Length: 389
Ligand code: FAS
Ligand code: PHB
Image (spheres, protein in one colour):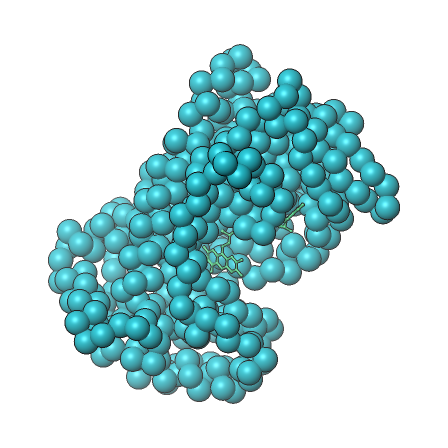
């Protein structure tokens, strides 16, 4: 088989890249290791930046998001007994969209199927070849059969544990990483959210987040020590701990129920540089990871593939390589700003086991400054609702 771009990974980055390329007349094949239903079963992000919402609408996959999503124009941060609501529209003139990653992925899958474009699910042992050759090659196995695709470019959209980043020459890649001493224990429940907007709380017992997927389905997280076994957490134990970390009026409003999903996400900051190796381009979690505190992970995948689609468009339709040659620099400039913001939100809102009295005073002062300075609040909201793409 031959194509112009092979996309490895059928998550949001790969599917959105495929959609953006289709709109520009560039041919792609997506290779996804898992089955489609498995991909949809992963509960991940919940907040779309303003720019992501605009881009999904421009790509013609925003209809269900606009019908079912929840535009939010504010968020509340708490620190012990302190609580402050940040009004996005007043401070930075834009809002965010609450619409789960699962639904974004479903919309993209449906659009690709409706266009009759090829996504190969169950593609095993994907391997990349000839990254510096005249053409690149991708091999994979499906139903016991070996297959090969010859292509101009490979987009590595296969996430943190994928094969693409590992296929780059070890001497050519630089890695920057911070692993946090805690994770997020997350629960999905079919109960109305505790409040109309998100609540991020730094309590002496640890971080908690009240989020949602709709007016009848909620998503909650509590900080837990790294290495925690999710089996040690019954629903009742989770609800009791969450209630203890929330402001009293929110704890009283909490509607509990049987968890539809319960999982622990480790927290890390990670960037691999550069994001291009010959004919291989990395995008999304394949190139970088942020702690979810800033709600940046999915949104960074979106800006990466927007840049990459523009680059392939210029290459094929204007015979110019300038944009793809500048992809890594341009993408990393936005990645690092999101890494900074996600690190800053995580540092301010979590209890660090090794923190001393001075560290906790500085953390509280960071919150008090943020809650008392319009300029500081504008900076926080500018990042949370999304820096320009
Ligand atoms: P993804 O990991 O979503 O997709 C990669 C795809 O590649 C997967 O479908 C995988 O099956 C496939 N793949 C992997 N290896 C392959 C191979 N060798 N061959 C073929 N296919 C292969 N972000 C937030 O903003 N908020 C959150 O709350 C949040 N929670 C998260 C929880 C967890 C457990 C994780 C892991 C991430 C979370 N994220 C969150 C970040 C997440 O939303 C990512 O940013 C987002 O999924 C990025 O999308 P992709 O880059 O497409 O990577
Ligand atoms: C979510 O709803 O899953 C969510 C929301 C905000 C975050 C992280 C996760 O910062």
